Every structure is written in structure tokens, then in C-alpha cells.
Image 1 (cartoon, rainbow, N blue to C red):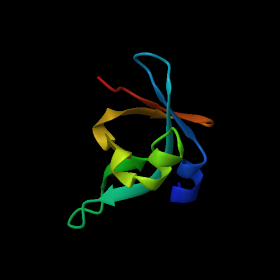
Image 2: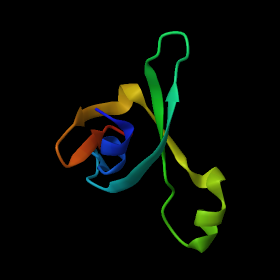
Image 3: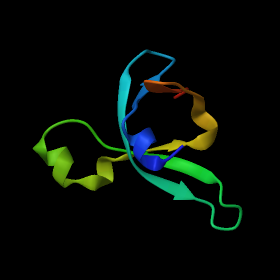
Amino acid sequence: MRLSELQNKNLVNVSNGKNIGNIIDVNIDYQSGNIKSFIIESKGSILTFLNKDNDMEVKWNDIQKIGEDVILVNMR
């Protein structure tokens, strides 16, 4: 699966059913080549668009299922 395919999927928190956002970047472990986490675009006003410090990181271990339309995430 390509990053561009993942970026087209919404992330949904399985604990509350809320849409978390979309993937904008990936953190990769350079030694193993494995994905460590996804960076999720912050949602909200133009101020959050300008302030990338509000972007969220979702660890690979928190991904429950990558489906055809959505990615299910367990955000505790």
C-alpha cells in the first residue's frame, strides 16, 4: 500500500467513533524500515492550519485495522 492511498482514508477512533483526521506524514524507523507513527492533520480554524504544532501523532501500535474506506485507531 502506498502513502497516497493511506492519505485518502479517514482515521476513526474506535473508542468514541469520532473522525480524527487524515494522514499528512509518516515517521519511519530508519534502521528497521518500519512505520513508527502517522502524523495527522489538525482540524479546526485557520489558526490551527497555520500552527502545525497542533498536528497529532498516532503510533503504529494504536492502529487497529486499515480498511477499504477508513483506518480504525484505538486512542485511549
